[in-house]
Image (cartoon, rainbow, N blue to C red):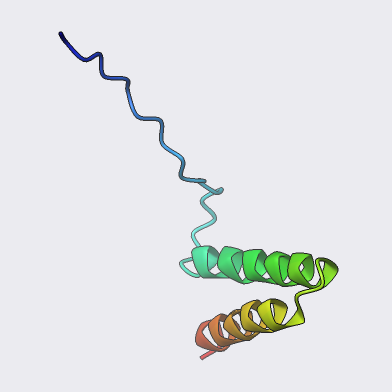
Length: 64
C-alpha cells in the first residue's frame, strides 16, 4: 500500500519589506501586547503580566 504525500503549506507570516531590520521584533512586541490584553480579559492577570514583561524586555532590546 502506498502513502500519498501532500505538499506542506507554509504557515509563516511575511510582512512588508520596509528595510527595517527590527521589524520582526516590533511585530513580536505587538503580538505579546495583544496576548496580555486577551489574558486580562480572560481573568488571568498573572499570565498577562508574563507577556507584558516579555514585551517590555524586547522593547528594551530594540531601544539599546
